[in-house]
Image (cartoon, rainbow over all chains, first blue to last red; front, side, top):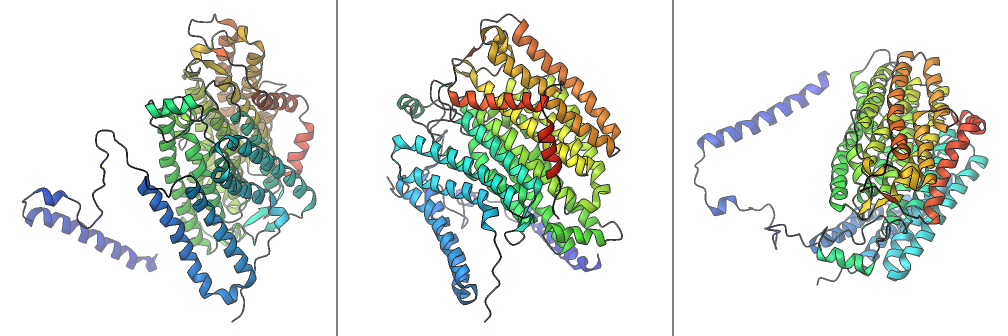
Length: 119
Length: 513
């Protein structure tokens, strides 16, 4: 248990700092609200078009995100495999090819079912 | 530099899982390249033959391969694992038969033509006018079945978690795809997803604590560390508790099964049958392995917990089932109660308990699949007649269907000459031998409560006059007839001649550690 005390202390400090900041900001900060203050600032963009009045999000953005994940995951695993190619040998090569085939399948699916057509 | 050591993989022993998962990937390719008109038949052919081939492979593996760790120790080939794999493929195959039926619903099969259309919108009407059908359900089913097969044989905590995710993610989607009452179905899918994600996280956290305690994720290694301990350790107790919560969630035990009625009610009925049968079989299988193999040395710690959970599950499941007016919710609570009876056998924690649980799973899963298959056939013009009031007088219009349903209900109630009796007798005997008499008394009380419920439904089917809104019985295709017929036939056969299967479960019920 003794070994865990630094972690507990660090957690406690972090919590205390967060709580202190929020409380002190509420008391000392100026309160001049305007439109810009409630807008998203450097943490995402305004969704467009907005799903107002029961409307729906266009699924296109989601498809782009899925496509990004397909290639992003591919890269994340390809890079260390390339670095350790010698040690991994034939088994590593076959395993990686199977992995790539598995990643190509959703790409083919998206392409054939019209996921790449923007309109 | 020296090459890394390559893990030794027994591909024959792994074949059932490989067949199902490769078929699932091919299914995705079929979705991409087959013309729309040919997709449904292509997918059905692929799914059906993959499950049948995997089942045959399980038999071949059982007959020919030596038991022991396979795939570098990530999976374990042993009697219970193979029995459960076979049972999962049997129940999945039956569920696929019922899912493939497109005659009971005049609109098509049980799934929405295009899940992306707004419920009640113009697009949805257009889709149903053109008679479009969703064929992605079949690859999703195959992925889910592959996950189930891995789940019951996983031999370390990480494989357990990955198998859980492989089986859960397709299920969340399948739950939300119902053709009728789509909003209810989508609500069920969202509830199941949120609760399931939380349960997965809890299971993963428990696994992390177990690793922190034992320094290994392999079941055998954890068992060794636990056998070496001299005092109780908070870390490992917390780990077992969290892993138990994660697995009991999937089993649907009280108090972790609050999602069961809502999800079972909202999901397309064949999918509900699949969840109540195959998924529950796999979850119990994983619970058995986790409790007996890595944490078997701590049975004095987890047994009392299991006693309380089993008692609550049986009593609350049976009592609340009495108050239901919807047939799917009633069957959901009945499946919760059955999970409680299964947990009695798990709590017995010995070989007799294990074999009784395996038999119970077989008897319960085939009966519950047939029950949900029958629910798909009893219809009013707008969909399935799920309100129990509409079932009045079904026995006079369709004696065969009512007889089949009565047999299944009697099996759930544990009446002699049905499989349910042998199964309940088995778990009660195992529990008494293991010294869990109070649990058996609770079980008998719960059985009596449940029996009253089932008899009430039988009375409603046969001895109540049909009301004006009463349901009719759709004429099913041979697929549903085969699925339901198999379930009913096994229920009777296992009740009258249980000995061959009892011998089988007795021989298989030893975990390789």
